[in-house]
Image 1: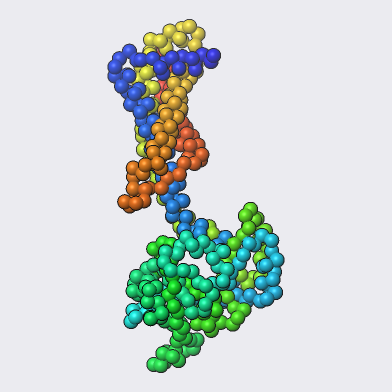
Image 2: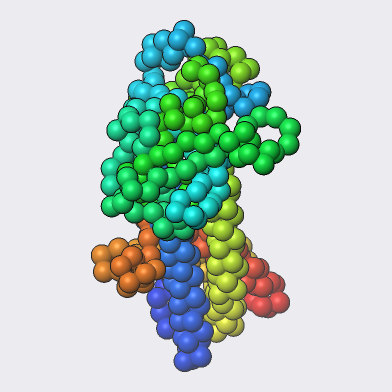
Length: 400
């Protein structure tokens, strides 16, 4: 067995000559355990929070969205449709016509966006998971599905949908606004047949309709769309699909995947995760330098033993390694115990929901292998550095 390791193990698991040494060592070990446990809990909490925040995009946003590269619309000809249908990596695609509109319902008014979608749109997003009232579009050009906030602000109710229609207005192209609204705005009406709920922002943004109604309201040609949304087959190579789409449309389009559509949200969550990691790591650094203090006190306590070992032929390097390994062992074992306790607490939270966001929703958590690795290497590296600094205090004067 390695000589410094053997002595370090004996020192770690044996009591010091005074109660103060034992207390300091216990505090240092507790600091390692609490630091590892806290960091693991924070990382698991943010992994769960990220999943919770992004879960809506998994069933609301398509795999790929095509936007106009120039202008406000894309020309989707019959030839281009056939080319999209022929692509094996595309499971389904939908024409989309989207524009800002002015809503009026029962003398209440609001700005929102109309989003005209194809009949197969429910194959691209999971409409059954966002629908909270009524039904989804059935293909009738005069049906609409509105967001929960829009319904609340306009006082809409599917029970009297046919008694009161939703009016939608968009300005006609041209200069100036006439006193005659019929000359300044295009108008279409729709029957409110359903309500969706995704999140606060989207619930007040969209009125879904058929692509035919949206085209009619905006005065677009039959081949004009503002977006094309695509669902890929499982295991499709996104890069290959994008390359083929560029070959079909050329510079006419700009392509974004689901991550790019939620770029701001991803950046915000990643930044919050990083800041929290750095804050907890800073706290852990302070706690782990108790390891250095404990090693220094142990060096003082074992001064007589150190001189004996030196006189028996141990080098200063060997003696330094003894206390370096003692600190490293304390850190590794404390980290493993902290990870175990953190894992148990996260499992208990998942099972029993001790921490709740609302009375019916527990705080989300997710255990990942990456969290274990990040915590283990972060804590052990900091603890080993602390032990290295402490063991460097051993010099020729100490053994003289």
